[in-house]
Length: 240
Image (cartoon, rainbow, N blue to C red; front, side):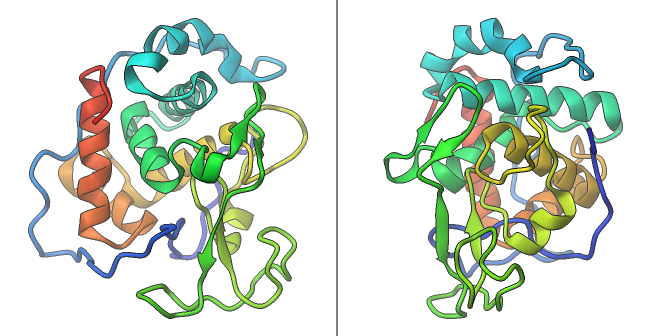
């Protein structure tokens, strides 16, 4: 499993609905960050054959209904956080933060009635708006020839964690051991997001580290606040 590859500083995701508010070093950090870590995730074998997140099915199934998160998505978030703990123990990334991002970006892979299979594959693929520089969006010319996002002219954010193609090429990983690195697979997207957040934030147990990671993911204070609020709710065992 390729856990992490250093890359240029480019935002991981673009919101389906753009925000124009930004956070910069030196401005106030929102209160209550980082959000609580939530229920501890059981140990897993990160080198097991097949879909590693299946090891967390019982844990996820016990919590999914109360959290209003699909079981498969919750497995993916928890597994990604567990892998991060093993591979980068100084990162301190929680599954609640990943779940908060997944909720804000795509309602855990269900945006516009998308369906998630047991292996984490999502159909139809979730695509964000064309990043054409209008309505508060970034302007990102095509970087993948439309191969990943289906648009040969402009980039679009992809999948349940809304990666842009350029960042996906650098950070995308095969988390479920199916031989495919897909932004439209929940497992792959969650673990790729974990690697990106750890690389950009350092120690996410600190307010500054957590905010740096979220700022890199989406340069918006309101975005960070919303992710925090969802993550905090999940840590308490409920949805907002």
